[in-house]
Image (cartoon, rainbow, N blue to C red; front, side, top):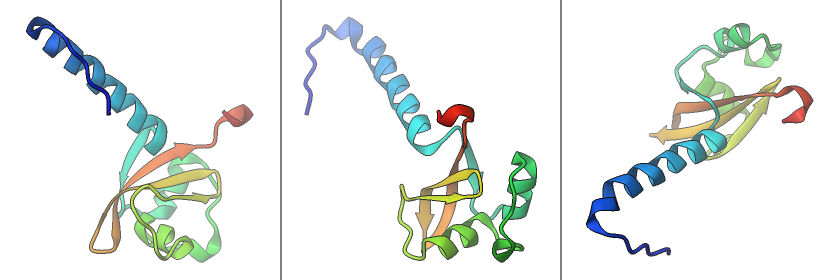
Length: 108
C-alpha cells in the first residue's frame, strides 16, 4: 500500500494523474481495442488481416477463446494466428469483453 500526503488543493490533480496511469496500464495489459465476445471470430480475422484456423470457423470470439482455453478466467490470454485475445470480462462462464493486441512488427 502507498500513502500520499498532499494539501486538499492538490487532490483533484493527483486523482487525475493516477487515473491516467491506470488507463495506460490497462491498455498495456488488455490491449488497444475492446471487442464484444459475441463478435464473429471470422469478421475479426478479416478486419485485422490474419489467417483464421479452419477449426474456429463460424465461432464467436468467446467460443474461439473457450475452445483454446476451456477454463478461461479474466486476464487470461489466448494467442490465435497473429492476434492476442485477452479475457477482459467474463459473465456466466462466457467471455463478454475481449481485449485485442495485434502482433507488432519487430516483436514489440
